[in-house]
Image 1 (cartoon, rainbow, N blue to C red):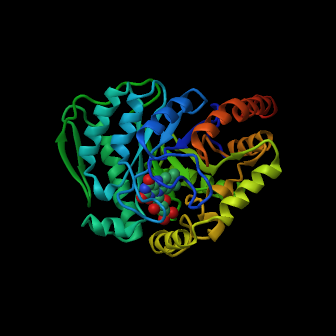
Image 2: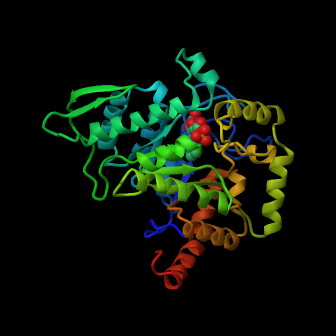
Image 3: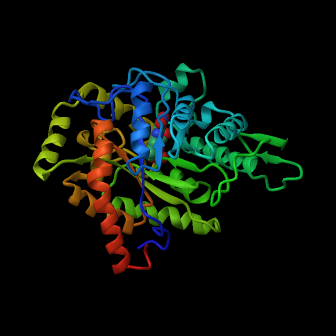
Length: 378
Ligand SMILES: Cc1cc2nc3c(=O)[nH]c(=O)nc-3n(C[C@H](O)[C@H](O)[C@H](O)COP(=O)(O)O)c2cc1C
């Protein structure tokens, strides 16, 4: 059992469907829409049904089933302005943003939303996107070295080591000279600055997760696959002498139905109706981007065709079954160090609501039981 966390109730985030095609690359009916009206309503439903966070996706061009996309930072801000409590995590690529410009943007969004903006630093997988935008595509571990600097720059600008002179940074990718950001982000108790999440599971990503991020996001994983990452990331945090270890979010595609049979049948139908050329095209793109790194530890390194129908391996977490079965798995992931579950659905609006009404109460009951059984944990 990891020495960290799980002191607080499990938190929940949902994937913002700001990209067309839904969360599975399948022709199965998906009652989900990528437009603003749908998403505004969804965000309000989510914050009233137990969700703490929403995570937007960043994509600049059509790829493998996602023909249309709304930009992540502007869309995230629009969702913040339409809600009251939900925190929205905007995905950003270091290769396409100058970090001080983003730090400034986030500070403003933080004031407009009373301290509810966060960022997800993603190092990227879609080489064609960088080529189309005319920006260099660095080799895998160099992308992560740049992401580490990017995160350090954000932190330094929001909370400078020497506030008298402002932020300073002298790295291989970024340089900042006496930059005094005003206003700073909102002062929120328990938060040093807007939270910094990161997505990526390779060795380089794990090192960054432990050394510099506030949160480490894992792709969908079984119990052991998740635990293995928690152990390694926490070791990196210890090696770096960090006072506060990172927290862990785990992706999972949820299919909660009245019977296990129904849930399994839905999964079977999603896979049977997979958009094969799109899934295969995606597999080729991600394998050159991530899984091709030496030790094959990256996301998608051992994903099967079926896994990739949910492009973040969400079926592997097996949040598929009755509310009771799903709650049992959620609790076991919590025992293994998960602070947050990041959830995707087939029919977002109705399933987010169903989660709040039918699944979350059972998870909370089981959390209470867990705290009696293993008080050190909760
Ligand atoms: C939770 C999560 C969200 C992500 N969101 C995006 C995204 O919005 N846009 C993007 O280009 N990549 C996204 N990625 C993918 C990363 O950019 C990266 O390519 C991927 O995690 C592979 O990294 P690895 O080689 O370190 O395993 C996301 C990854 C995770 C885990």
